[in-house]
Length: 231
Image 1 (cartoon, rainbow, N blue to C red):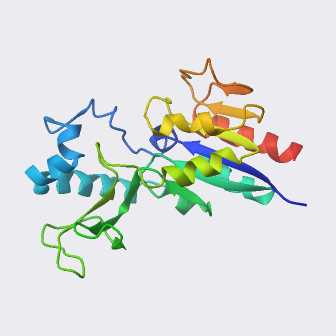
Image 2 (cartoon, rainbow, N blue to C red):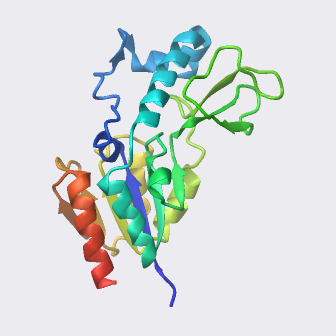
């Protein structure tokens, strides 16, 4: 019997419980610089050293973090379901927890890429990228991140997965960040949808929605057990 397909859309809230700070946690500023200055192509062109330092510290933070109960619970769904994680997060906590199919909408902090050929992508061993570290074509490497103002190359894949899902789960995202927040519009109106978030917002127009007003670490394991027991 073919497994039902579950699309899981995760945001900053699921990683916050592992100690990973969000842009909101740093109040839109870092060392008195706006987030746009350290997370945009213009910022990189203006001051690559500053942008690089920002992402080195983010990378170091991710390496020191560990998957939490929510990440681990989602892996259990794979026993009975065909699960795809679609995440706005740039960390690798879903991978380290053991999830097999993951779409990173906003890039991956533990990877870097060429500044002249975006398809040249490398996985880093440690946390520190240095100015002067170059790709095989001789160009400076940059964080493999979707910056403000850049297109989201994995969006089409994500839309396709949501459109064929039998169940949609949303965890730890305010549904305010577009184009990612628009993903819910691609889900079938009639499929069950679950939102796990202690402060749910913008949910009025979502059909067939069950809201679980809890932190990810509490709500996700409970939801997973319920789905497994009824599968």
